[in-house]
Structures are given as C-alpha cells and as structure tokens.
Amino acid sequence: MNSQRGPYPDLAFVDIETTGSHFDRDRITEIGIKTLAGNQVQMWEKLIDPQTYIPQNIQRLTGISPSMVQGRPCFSELAEDLKKELEGKIFVAHNARFDYGFIKASFKRVGIDFKPKVLCTVKLSRLLFPDQPRHNLDTIISTHGLKVSARHRALGDADLLLQFWRVCESKFGQEKLNEAINQLIGNASLPPNIDQGVIDSIPDGPGCYIFYGENKTPLYIGKSISLRSRVMGHFQGALTQRKEMKLSLQVRDIDWIETSGELGALILESRLIKERMPSLNIKLRRSKDLCAWSLEEDVSGVLTPSLVTHHHLAPGLQDNLYGLFYSKREAHAYLKALAKKHHLCEALLGLEKRIEGKSCFGYQVKQCSGTCINITPIALHNLQLKTAMDLFKVQVWPYSGAIAIKEGGEMIVVDKWCYLGTAINQDELYELAQSGEVEFDLDIYKIVKKALSGAYRNQVIRIGVDK
Image (cartoon, rainbow, N blue to C red; front, side):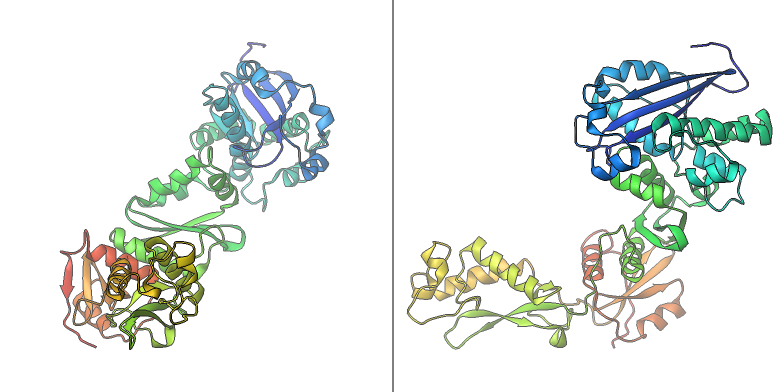
C-alpha cells in the first residue's frame, strides 16, 4: 500500500452485496473497496461464498448467482486480508451502518473485533447539499452526473462513492471536506437522516419519544426515564440488531414529550401508541369489547363461571370479576387452560355439555378429578376454582372518588383505574377530577394498579370528589 499521505486520512470506500438484509441470518456475497491513500487509488474486490442460499430477487438485483460464488473463499478465509485492507483507514460507505454492520457482524463470528472510524456518504451529502431533496445513491448519481460502471455490484458502487468524493472535493475544497469529516466522523452511530443537533436537543429526563419516517408517518413510539440515552441506544443497537437497523434506516425525524417521571411516561406511551398506530410497535388493543368472568352458584351448589360482556362490565366497581379479556374467544381459552392446569371439570365450568350421571370428556382422559360423577366433592371443586381465579381477580377501585398520584411537579389524576389527565396546580386537579366518565383501558389499569401497589403507594392525594 502506498504510504504517501495527502490532505485527508486514508479513505476506504466500501460496498458489499449480501443475500439479504438480516446480518444474523444473511451473509456477504461480494466486497468491493476503492482506497484513496494520498493521491493513489487502489482496488480490492472479492466474491465470497456465503454458504447459504441466494434468493432469486437478490440474484436479479446484483447479478450474483450461486454458480459465481461456488468454490470462492468464505468470509473466514478472507477475514485477515480484509482486516489488513481496512486497518487504519476511515470506513466510507453509503448508508454506512448497513455495510459496516454486516462486516462487523462477519468479523465477530470469526473472533475479530472491528471498530473503524466510519463516514456515511448519505450524511456527507445531506451536510454539503442541504437543498437536495433526496440523498440515495441513484439521486446522487443523476444529480452529479456520476459514471455508472456496474450498479449493484460491490466495486462498481464503491467507485461511485469515490466519484462523489471527487465531486465534493472539486466543489468545496480540501479544507471544507476535512471539516466535514471531523464533524461527521464522531457521529457514526447516528442514522443517515438525523443530525447531531437533533440528538443534542433531546432532554435526558423521563418521557416518550416518537420516530417518524417519510411524510411524518409514525414509525415507533417508546418511553424512558432517560430520553436521549434511550434514543441513542436504538441507534447503537442498529449495528447488531435487525429491528434496530430497520428503524435506523427509515427514521427521518424525532419528536419527544417530557413527563415528570416513569409513571407519566408509561401512561403516555400506552395512549400514544393507540392514537397514532406506529408501524413498528406491537399493536396495543383498545378496550371497547372487554369481557370478564364472574362466579355464581347454581341451584345444585356448583360455582359456575358466567361471562360478563362489555355492555354490562364496570371494572373497578364490580367485585365479582375475574380476568379482563379483549374477546370472548380469549376468555374461553383462558378458562379452558385453567381447567387443564388444575384438573377442573369442563362440564361444570360450562365449556362442554353436562349430562347428569355421566362423566365429562376430561375425566375419560384423566384431565378432570371426577366432580361431574361425584368422585370429588363439589365443595372442593368450588374451592379449587375460586383459588385459581382469585389470582386474576379485577381489583375494585379502593377509593371513594378520584385521586391524584404525585410525580415530580405534576399530579396524575385517576378514577376507577381510568386516567383523567395530568395537573400542575389545584385548579387543574379539581377540574380533571370532575371531568366525567372516561373509557376504561386495560393497559392503563395494569399500569396504575402496579404503581399503587408499589413505588407510588405513598404518593396518593385523595381529592375527595365522589362522582
């Protein structure tokens, strides 16, 4: 390698082709490197046997077929040579965390720690050409008139990055490019479309953050007691986790809402996910069709579950409620699982037809203890059922009216397990407490119940408004 030094550190313009986008499962099929050291350019290009299937769509895109990589070295055989090729150079790539993430993961599998300085040409394009609407490689090719030799082949795309660098050098000069390197090189863990200034402005206190994609579409909503640290955690995780990489490549903007503490952040996150339906969150279900079991004794003294549907459900007010389920199907599945676990009689539970004097199907397969044919006393069956279901009893609201849970400088107002709002003074507090009925939400119920039985139990303010 020529040791002559130019105005910049040695730059390795890198591109890879792979069998897919999942760097735990997929593998590299080709690596191309154009190295700029001083005024000299050198090339390094290798086809690699991925030792796995190359999907048809990837073959069509790259032109790399299984026959082309058959008999080629696998990554482990090239690892030491590749390490020497990249050592001491700035790793330059387009959407760098993809190429860097794959190469880093491949090195890790063979026991090599790979931590170069990384420069992303998407970030460089955004920094130097802020008025340009898009910064993908095809846009850069057409905008700057780059000469395409082999699109979607590793060395061909690496050469496009070197051409783009030459365009930037010609337009802005060496001093400006060195400033750009120094500005961007420290932000290697940030996504290509997010500036350091955005990250710096995020507070490191509690609250919720929202990642947006194209056209301000919500991608992901999360919560943390340390917002900035959590957001950065996503981007650092993008180098090793597929979900985080997908998020990092799609994110275009970040917003956040501060809260006074963890409880406020938990409640806000639950509400925001239901309202905005971000594509990468697990979808939280609304509670409009909730149902629960109640236990009633029939004329023969058998304790029988009866399903209370949402029309007659008043969680927090009814004492004899068990479970809370999003659907009748979910409620019956829970009761069936309970019967099997505790050897209860499905006929007595109403899950199958009861025929007087005949055993249930569960008894025939040794899943029922025989209460249906008087082998086990009804009183024992009732006790076993009640004991099992008590673990899932819906707690009655333990206060006479609305309360406030003090957190930092705010007061979270709750009544009958429902969130009414957050107040910062007495006037707001009483206004919220008298604001009327709010739809019961199962996720909020779980959050508030846990808070009141744990860290927040001594932070309760009784408002004394009984609706």
